[in-house]
Structures are given as C-alpha cells and as structure tokens.
Length: 511
Image (cartoon, rainbow, N blue to C red; front, side, top):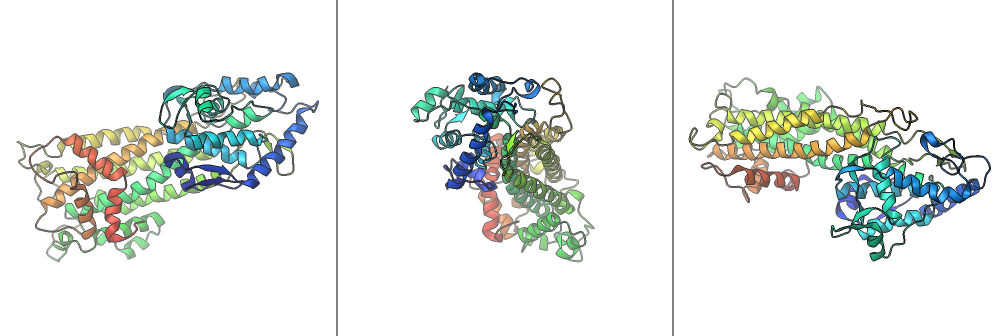
C-alpha cells in the first residue's frame, strides 16, 4: 500500500500502514504547490523590518529578540539542536514513523511555510526506512511534542542518531549519505515548523485505537467462552433487553455475544425450567455494559483522532489568505484527554476479565469444575498462578489509568505555563493496551481449558473454533506443565488476531 500525502487528512489506516507495515509515501502534486505558495509568504516576511515570530525573532520566552538576517539559519539549527533534549529508552520504531508521517502531513497542508525540499526529505527518510532515535522523556505535550519532533528534525539535518531499515544504529549523516538523501539546511521558520505539533501523541492514539478495536472484539470472545464454561446463560444478552438501554457499544457487544454463543450445547444443557441458577454474577451478566462502554469511549477517541488528523498544527501558521498568525492549536489537551479516557476504560475491561477468570478457579463458584481447573487438586495447581499474573497486570493498569492530562508543570520561564502531558498519556496507554491483551489471553486460555473439561457437552461452533485454534500450540487439560510458554502462546494468539479470525470464521465479522 502506497500512501499519498495531500493537503487533506490522512486516514487512520494509512497511518498504521506507514508506521507499522512500512508503506511508502509520496507527496501529492497539490501539496507541493501549496507548500511552495506558502513559502513565498515567509520569504516576503523575511526582509520585513517588522519582527515576525519564528521568522525573524527568537522563540518562546526569547521571542522579544529580533534576529538579523545573517543569523537566521543558525537560529533554526540552534532551535532544533537545543530542543532535541530527550532522555531515556528509545521509543518504538512504529511510533517514530507515525510521528514523522503526521508532521509531513501538516507540512503538506501548506500552512507551515517550509520549503518543498524540506517536506520531501521527510518522505525520503520514511521511504528509506531511516528512523531517528527518539527518547521516552522530553515532551510536555505543549508546544506539541517538541523534543521528540526535534530529534526527527535533527536527523533530517544530518545530525544525531538514527536506526537504519535493518535496525542498525548509526550517525544520521552516514545513514542519509548511504540512502542518497541530502541533509536539509534549514531556513527561516522551518525549524519551528518541524517541532510544533501533536504528532507523537496523535500517532500513538491512532495506533492504540487500531489495536484496541480488535482487542474489544476479542474481549467479547473470551467473555463468551467464560459464560459458557461457567454454565452461564445467554438470555441476558437478548436484543430486546439491550434495546431498553440503547448505548450503541452495549448493543454491539451483546450482539457479538449472541453470535458467539449460538448453538452451544453447553448452554442448552441447563437452559430448561429445571435450572436452579437464578442469575449470573455481574462479571458475566454485565459484560455488554462494560465492554460496550469501552466501545463508546473508543468511538469518541476515534472521532477526536479524525479531527486531529484533519488539523494543520503549527505556530505561527500561514493562513489561506496569506497572513502569518500566532495561535494555540499546538496544545495537546483534546488528544491528551481521550488518551487518558482510553486508559481508564482499558483498565475496566481488564478488571472484569480477571474477575471472570477468577470464578473458574474457585469450586464454590465454578459450578462443578475442579479447584483451579487442576487435574488433581493439591498435587496440581492448575491455573492458580495464571490468575496471579492477570491480577498483577490489572493492578498495574489501574495505576496507568491515573490521568496524565490533569497535571501541568510550567516551562519556558512561565511562557508555556499550562501544558497537556499528552505524550505521557500516550506512553502509558501503549503499556495499558499491551497489558489488556495479556489479561484477555489468560482468560481465553483458562476458559478454553474449562470448555474441554465440560466434555462430553460441546461448546458453540464459534467458541469451539477459538479453542481449537489455541490447541494448535497449547495442549488441553492434564497434569501441571510449565505455564509461562503456554501463556505466551495465548498472548500471541490474541495479539496476532488469530483468535478473532477463528471466531469470525464461524460468525462472520464481529463488531
């Protein structure tokens, strides 16, 4: 898939394709025209005796100084070098590629005033697979993701450190030379245009939303297996009951559960009037309400992401009628808030998953199964410690749910006195998404064992397909085995999308 970057918004799947799958990029002809047109506006201001922020002045709290023409190239270089001040572990390749693509998308709008060759250099680095080394710490999310973006701009200048397409770490100048890319010598306004944006936090939001969408469908799968394995009922998921509380996500989750549990002999075995179970525990019965809330939250976050993808974030900006105006659009508050919101709902979905798993392990609540699903309880411990692993992750997710966006530390001599912490919100959400996948994998792993233990009763065709897919790499019930490799197989089964594909081979597309 090749992605054409034009004056309009990129689609979320285009961001994922470039960031994660190495799709090539190209600037649309109309984008090159608009970049060139706005550059003429900046060139006209460069010789103006009146100071213009970012063109002929310093930056931030130093904006009061007028910079003479002969020092302006140095001004831009100094800006990038001084702002490339990150620290800590390297950020993931896909995050840096998303960040660079989104900065390129803003450059392509023509609202930043850079030269066409500067925008083309970003496209060239992406296409060559050259990834600047960006560090975990350094962004306050205002004015945008300054430090991470500055490390990328530094690489475009032929300075700093990068990773090549094969992962080798080397000086940027060497990597650019090997790829036939000429380093950019920045001119007026360009350094500022390359570092003033919400591209890092937005890129991580797009990637997280993509992954969470699949995980929420997988959460319905693992929940269905738990309802079935614990002799629960699917009656509570009936469409007319769900319609009495018409939240869209709730209805979608319940619909998934009905499809997944259709034709289950296990559920049919206790669905008659002689069944003595009055109603299931909340963790089973209220699955659509919790999973649905997460879906609705994700829908809101995706809406915010789509608006941000359609934005031209820089300061100052070149307006459509040729003015150069200061603004506050670089503030990350809209993105930071939904990143935090998603971390909260991720923790909630993981929490209810862990509760469903725990019920399997307690003979007082698992409706006839061995303690801890052990082959010989007392001699064997079964899945006892798998639930410990879940619990440890869920506890971590609750800590990660503490919002970053409510914090603010003033910077730049109080000029930037309220910041979003959106980058921090995005970093913790990435960790939370990983944790959710692991929690769901343990539930699926445990529920699959329970379904086997319900034999000769057979599960629904959809849940059976998921269990059978797991059985390709993980054995069924028996005496205790080394659990860690099996849990990791389950994690990969979930993360790869194979669990979801197995269910959908029976149900068709789940919502």
